[in-house]
Length: 287
Length: 287
Image (cartoon, rainbow over all chains, first blue to last red):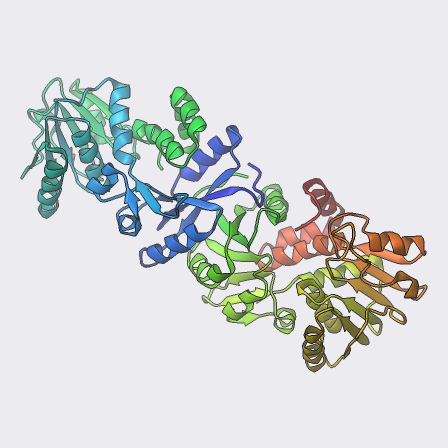
């Protein structure tokens, strides 16, 4: 990595920002593939997001932004254009300045998830899915499952008000059957996703009861820490197929690269996902 | 250089910015001395400077700005505090956010110049100096010569209006004898400085007539390109001591580092100026 005056600059905005792993992963890829680009962190308070993002993208060598928590949702309102997934989910992972000066955003969390399912050999089209927890990750996942042709999607969240609005939005946008559940009851679903933070703390309950899972259900726990998570361990003990969220991160990387115009690096990275996994594992497994 | 979410970020603002050498020099020093910090370029238009600088310095991990052309002067108006040289010259090279939230600036161009003179063994105190060209570099140099105790300073610029105001300001601030000259006549001065861009183009005239120099005068040409410059060659041909501006850049580096709190790196760099010169020479000799 040799930063000069002609280096293209990208910023990852978060608050806090110290925990983000994207700079290590992407700068490694930029250096390895000879791209004169750098991704640097910026700790921006929520109240400053709009003004900061606008000013940053006026700089002619600052080409785009990565959005980390808590900015993924607020960024949507600043965009001129947004991909369908981002618009539907109401959140974006990235924003770029187009050649015509417009600001365009896109969401990759859900694409990363469905690409990870494909990697695991788990079909989505025509299947039923339960998403437990509809914070940013859960909404992105539900949206991508709807876009990928799931037959029926059920949502549960302890904040009951959230799921109804999201279900209505996804049903209208994708014509898919989306319901809100009063309890996180996993029986009868082909795919069950934990998108809650349950499992972070030692005394957390499981997000749902694994004993109620169908025998051939597939579980994904997108929690990045404490691997294997209590949910994964409980599923494995019952012989239920269960995957960590790690692959979801890995599969997002080419999407960011393509969005920001690094097409050849995106192709190389997608073709060598095992190399990419090694980078993540070396750097730590959260982003 | 391993940029992570916890890396402290500095920006160098210029327009254009591709030509700045500071990222290569300072990132090399940060990496070599184990500082978790990075300096990245930002091409900011003059009209955007105020808003960009304010927003950038609100980010809690963006600790400071390097100011390149054309922002050195405009930045002064955005500061809460400024060192004496910057205030007197009306320009700063750097601005930092202090712990109390105030924005503080400082000018190093002139200090770099007087430190370079010390390195060459050229005394300033009680001596007379002519500064030809009072753009940013010339004003900074004249200001530092005044602060360093020059007995008499003469200024010449083809834009006659500029020199009178600067002479008045320096005389008031430092109690030194400062005059504006109608011609760049170097006779009778101990030190004569070219701070014009003359010498960049092949058909440029010399900034002053070397034949008029006193035999024991010392000349400094701060032009960074086309080394040795036509002026340096003309002086050398007459046996006049004449130095390029390169050392002025080298001697500024510890000042930036100290200003931004990298005291131990500043000390190490000052103690090993020859190593620093090698870095500049490897990276190109302009900043």
